[in-house]
Every structure is written in C-alpha cells, then in structure tokens.
Length: 344
Image 1 (cartoon, rainbow, N blue to C red):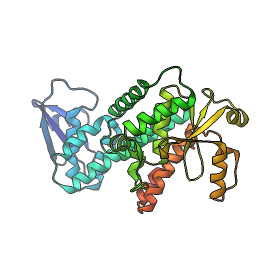
Image 2: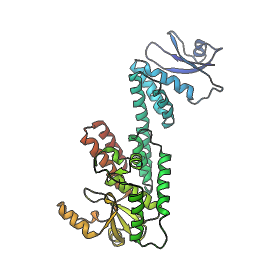
Image 3: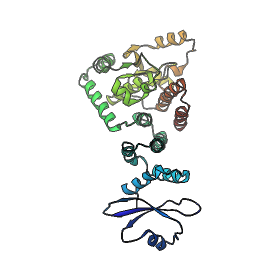
C-alpha cells in the first residue's frame, strides 16, 4: 500500500506530491529531503503499486485529479500545469473521471484541461507539418478535426479511408481513360457510398470535420474536396486542389505533379476540373471563366491552377472560422485563427 501526501507551507501551496511507504511517516520523508513541516499535512488518497517509478504514474495522476475539487486557485493552477504537461496520453484517464464525477465545477476544470492538452498537441502537429514537405494532407486534416470532434478515433478514420479506397479500386482497371476513371470514382463515391452536399445546412461547422463527414456522408465544398483529393491520390489519380472563389474544386492532370512546376506547366497539364460538391461533375477552363464573370470577379491565373496543400488547409480553417463567426462563437474563432497562423 502506498500513501499519497500533499505538503503545504505558510506562503503558498508547493503541492509536493510523494509516494510514501506505510512504514515511513510523511514527516520523516520531509525531514529526509530537508523540507521542514510546520503546517498540516493532508492525505490525498491511498493507492496500490508494485514499483515506485520516477516518472508520473497512474496513481499520481489520480491524486492530482482528486485535487481539482480544491477551491484554492493556486492549487488548481499547479495541478492544471502538471496534468497538461503529461500530454495527450493522460486524456483517457481524465475522461474516465468525468464519468464518475458529479461536481459541475470539477467537470468544467477537467474539460478545460483536456482541451488545453488537445490544443497544444494540434499546435505541435501543425507546426511540424509546416516544416515538412507538406505532401501528407491527411495529417493536418486529422489534427484539426481531432480538436473539434470529441472522441475522434484517428485510427478508425484511417481504416474507413482505406475501406473507401478499396471499394473504389475494385471497380477500376488499368485501361480506363481519365474521364472513365473519374466516372468510376464518382459512381462509387457518390452513388454507392452516398457522399454529397449537406444542402439543408451547408454552413454547419460539423460539415468540415473528417469524422462527421465519414459518418454522415454529408459535407461542404472544402471537406468533400479534401476527402476526394485524399482518396484519389491514394489511388494514384493525378488530382490537385484549386482555390476557386466561393468554391473549392479539383484539377485532373496528365500526370502527377512534382511540386516544381511553374504556372504555365501546371495549366498545360490540366485535362479538366472536378466539382466535388456537385457529384463530381466534370467541367472545363471555359466554365471557370463563365463562373468568374457571373460573380463579377476578374479572371486570374491562380483561379485555374492548383494551390498548395498549406493553402488547402487554410481554406478548411477559413470554412470553420466562417461557421463559428455565423454563430458568434468568438472563443472558438480565436483558436481557429491561431491554427491558421501556424501554417501561413
């Protein structure tokens, strides 16, 4: 049996947390490390353990969580910092406490700590992705979705994507023309799998998240385009994202782009465009020109050629931001703005 103690001094809560064998009193332990105790010592809880480990273990984490009901703000700040420093691995333990905790104040504190850990983790993942070649566009999409979608299982998302890829691959063969390839993809993606636009509530923020998209099969231009792009590339389809004003479309090329092409080379390699929001309908450069004219926007080269993966993720964040602004969720909007700053 191990006893977990909290030691206090007169000036502040040091929150010294010790695992103490029953045969050693807390006063003796404090004396042995040169900590003189003149004030009460409160037993936080008792736990069992076979080995005393120098790193924070489950018992110590549990004891820290038990301290969340303390009304002293200094106690809370210290406990919060300790728990956040544990990283995302501690989240399941925190969530298990919410199932047995009735105190709303403690539940709010736990929720705040979980979101803080998730925020730090997403920031870290986006910063790392920004420093790479940014070819893996699924990574930032998963990172962003994981923050806003409670309980998102990223492994299950990857399994669902692999299942979708296989369903499309089984319908394809090596002798298809580009148009035939897209038609087969569209048939499986839209007709058989049921993906499409959420026309009833296109600006619902949940349309943007990959977990919700795979579950509901409904999304918006950027989420459907991203999913089409991710699955298409996994099937070696030479597709890229194009930032068309008020829309997000894909371009289909003669071959996979290497990322070193100039605008002229990219334009020359484009065979046609794909409208992912409208069941993958195929259209041409002239159609884009007519669309721009209809919405009174001057035609520019950037509206016809692929944008970078970083720009695509920025479009995703802009879509999320727009939804939060429509519902006056200012705190959530600030978080999105911070995520944007990490990839710009």
